[in-house]
Image (cartoon, rainbow, N blue to C red; front, side, top):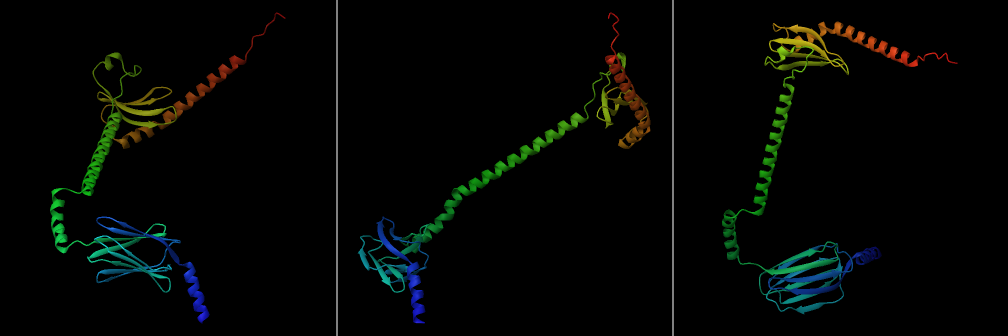
Length: 290
């Protein structure tokens, strides 16, 4: 059992870090004690306050010397480094004033900074506590200014986005209800087109890639026209027979058979013209000179 405990103690001693160097940096408002290790320190640090002294106990840290160093400072007058058993090191800071001690490791764990500074008097701390609200009310903090500016920028962006959406919807509405230019001389005579009436598009339905059915109003008359590869007037309405989408769909279905027959005849004529062009191109006149 003793051998087992000895092996555990030896492994802990091997894995523990060792103190290499120490340095003392004196400032007017603080004293820093910098410790450097040969390996990352992973042990714990405890603090004990005594009369005119503060003791820091560092576990898992080895050192083979005892050091006593006098410091010519109003904050700390003496520094003692005292090795203890089981890889424990004590840092004793002696002072004749009420001081605060803060120990912080470096990022890599190879160092430790022990900073000592004088505690302010309770009356001074009360005065600063009383002055803090007045100063905060007289001048806003930088965080409040940043938050206010951020909110203002977001509000301006939202207003701009809403304005752009309104303009886009307005332009789309005007484009949809834009009156058709009266350029169709095949449907209106010059006298009629100069009468001052405007052509207004009411409904439109696409039949195929080339043809569409359009219902538009000119004056008091509504015209149902097929536009595309050829222009064909289907019907005229004068007494408000077509008022909404349902009426337009009904009129479209009534003229569907007529449209299909017309498109078939149109395709047949195109095929015949294509056949004639091909036959005339393939025909070669006979030359009887030979």
